[in-house]
Amino acid sequence: MSTLGQVTGLLQLVPVQRAGIGLLLAALGLPVVGVLIVGLDIMPVRFAMMHVALLGIAIGQLVGLDPVLCALVACGLAGAGVAPLARTADSLSGAMGLLMSLAIAAALLMLALSGVNANGAFALLWGSILAVRPVDLGVLGVLAVAVPALFIWRRRDLALLLHDRELALCSGVAVQRLMVLLLVLVAVAVAGAIRLTGALLVDALTLLPALAARRLGRSLGSITVWAIGIGAVVNAAGFLISLAWDLPPGPILVLAAGAFALAAHLIPERRTTSWRVPASPSAPSPH
Image (tube, rainbow, N blue to C red; front, side, top):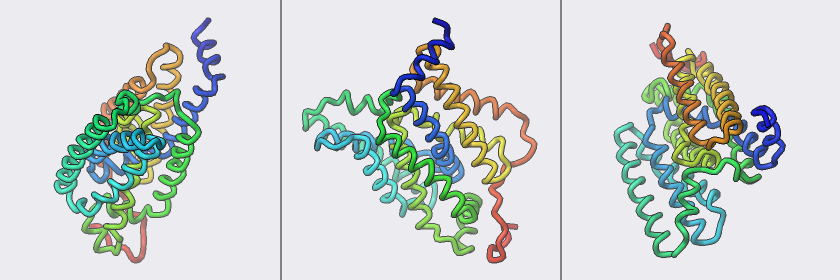
């Protein structure tokens, strides 16, 4: 059978179709979350939430509830809990380090004491894209709508916050509440990508498209559009390559996104990227 015929045949299978739909939905929301991570310089958050996701999975297995939904709840609560510590990047990094240590210790202790098979918990960290379920598509669908909607609704506030936190405060932006919302969004996005690439490879869907987009875009709006477009191209290309050559989708998605990000950074930079704030009569000039 030819490679094209093999891919066409695989695309007729329901699990493969669900995986493709999941990657499409992920491309609409998760790269935008990556723009937030890069813009706010909160890289440690995604690592901490991977550990919190494992704790949620362990709790789910222990009490007999859906592990992914438990991971979503655990990550959401953790994101809201650390928001008061996000006044500076340094304080947030320290909080994330503490959260990572406590979460992984609690998860391993819970798995050991309960006698639950730890293989299932750790398997979710590596992802299983062909095991995507309707409930997982529902979570990704909500993110695909909620994240772009937030950017449209609070675009000015987000641009001010990403440009300068003090400027946002002086302009009347409710920075603390917005940070809570953004950290919860980042945390839930990490948990929502577990089935697709696994928590350990979530950068393929979030951070790498955002890094490439920041090189190509010149404002918050254009960076966001670039991130979504790059995410869609990378997800589609990586998924088709994995089907054509019978390769594991997770690593292929990471390599494809990484190659795109590297190629974008090889393009000569013509202008420094800025977070342009939409004009508003009530907003002071950033200059």
